[in-house]
Structure formats: C-alpha cells, structure tokens
Amino acid sequence: MPCIIFQADNSRRLFLATVAFVGPAHADIYKRIDTAADFNTHIVDKKLVFEHGTARIRADGSTGGRLKKQGKFYGNWIWQSGYYCRNLVIAGEQTGTDCQLVEVSGNTARFTRNRGGGYTTHIDIK
Image (cartoon, rainbow, N blue to C red; front, side):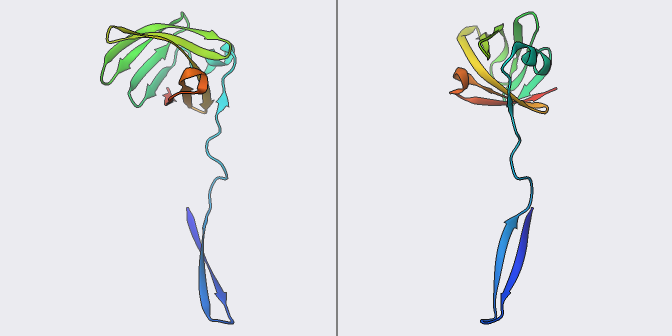
C-alpha cells in the first residue's frame, strides 16, 4: 500500500511529497520441482485449475481434464530428467511430447513448456 511522506524545506517553504510503497520485499517465491518424489507430492492426483480449464495428472501415468474451448482431453505422462513430459490428445489431435519445467509456491504452480523456454501456465492446486 502506498505511503505518502511530506517533507518541508524550511529555507524555501517548499513541500516535497515522496511516495514509498510499503509491502513485501519480493513476489511469491517459486521452488523448482526437480524430482519425481516432489512432483508426486505436490501435483499428482490433485485437481489442477487454470485459466483455460482443469486437469488431473494421475499416478498411473495417465492425465486428462477439460478445456473451456476444446472440451475433454486425455494423454500420458512420465517424469524425465527433471521435467514433466506429456503427450495429449485434444479434440482428436495428438499434441506431441512436451517436457515442462514445474515450479510450486504454496498451492500454486507454474508449468513452463519446452523445458522452461516456452509459454507458462499458472495453476491452482486443489
């Protein structure tokens, strides 16, 4: 929340206003998920809610959900070299394999496509 500080300069009778922002010194801190065990703990078998729909990544290697525009989707996934790698079928079309960087902060996650070099999806973990 902004805080306005008034400061008087007696020699010129000039008032200066300085705006300072008082609040957390940093944004949410995300921790990279780099092991299958951490991925299982934080993500697997939980309801994942994001801007374009919902998903569930299951312990049996399957995944699925519903997208607002394309409807239901399904696919398979594995944990490989520190990345969540998945191949989906959306509206009857295979997406191809994409390995994603996964980070968590509390009950939110970021999945970044193309091994961390692509589009980032922000997800609520339920």
